[in-house]
Length: 111
Image (cartoon, rainbow, N blue to C red; front, side):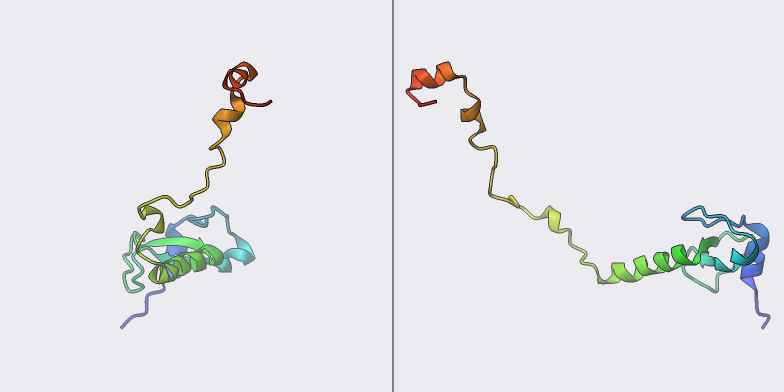
């Protein structure tokens, strides 16, 4: 079976720019540009490069870390739970503080 060097193929047909952060590569730092398989199947290497994107090593690591992190995160959204999340209302007495002095005097309240 012939080994397909998809990295060299990708470098020939795709611009040398990270698909996530937009950083451009040339010369010595070209080694930091990696091929990411969009469908995460490293065996799916169409000759037109439709399953590839070039990512810098940092964005490539981040892309795979997000997938791994998602496996450990809860599927339930805690913000969707019913009921109030807090019981304190800092503005509860605000209406009374904003009443004009004349209204307070009519009610017999001190200044």
